[in-house]
Image 1 (cartoon, rainbow, N blue to C red):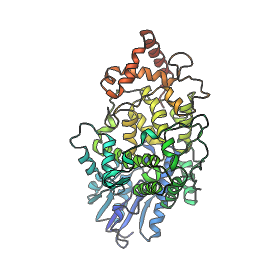
Image 2: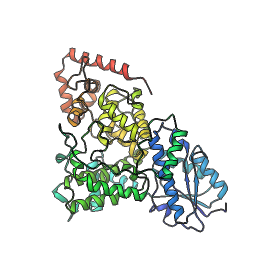
Image 3: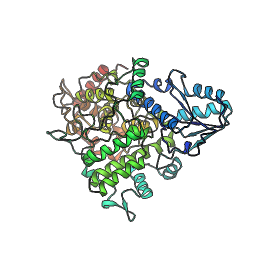
Image 4: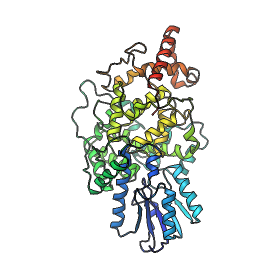
Length: 512
């Protein structure tokens, strides 16, 4: 191949035609570099769905670029084990004068690219990722001088900065969020009638990827029998429109509800497309806001949905880049249990965990309350090392990119950062799951019992968690009511709970 002037590096979660890395692309002199590397699929034991999602989206993006007549240097899976090897090969062959990239979404990948560029003595220009509405520098300015970071204050700043859901400098509806109007359960009648998310039948490229993943990663968890994710920008926009038309109106009301064998409910299923940059968050937020202004969805639902993107999504990215790399090692509650083996199989007699994990392995998906208050809650109460929980979440979900997954898992779900992400540990007994789902119906455990043969493991471990960490939790005002409830337990009850919790850990602590 003839040499190139610049090699534009495009990673698997940067599939954005409006990327800053491509803004001055010169089709005559430059080339775009992309690489599927086995190391990204094997550093955590990724599910087949996650591997397939990244690779098929990358290959479709490659074809889009080539359709523009742009030169793409593309390394498929068999060629190289890691980014460094793939990039060295291309630099040796093409001898570029410069490398250009948008800032990576993972700290280790960014450092790897910088390290190999330095070793090859090729200048590397790193550009801001304009996909996001808040730069890392802007977040650092927001965080400067604050004793505590809280998403609500950041979210209000972002509303003011962007103008979304604002009128004359004030929040529409007279308030910043409508949490008290949202988050209902379905009740006895279940989710009711709704249109399920649009499915996207695998085309020839996706079918080829599915076959490759099934062969090369045959022993990896999960299945691709139901793979139907949007893997191009066009499909992602169709998925957005489908959500706006059919599920947004009830999203807020039922965003926290769960129901057996119902993976999608009223959720958007857009996070994977957004995190791979197939879909711009501005387009998503604008579409939701327009639905409210057009009278197609209530403000309560629209604000709740927009807050997840303009608030949480931007906030967790800011947290990630502000505190990495040491953030990955934080373990504020000194949790050291192994991850139970059933997280990789779904084979457990706890119905809620069986449903959420089986669904996760089948689709590569679970909605945020299944992640926070089922799989995450059990790991927190059980005392699993938060780094092990992080590795599982990064491995199993199609939307998992470290910048968004790590703070949500280690910080929000496991309280491993000691309060950076969340103001308190999100702990609850089995009665929360009973209230928000039908999982407990037909389960052999009783969420009202903490000891005995029918005791719900969530409830046993909840009280044991409070007992274990009582001195530390007493210092947190938001935990005061839960800690005060410990006074209802006499010494005999405390001992029985702790004994049963110890037995549960012995039963479930076989590591994966």
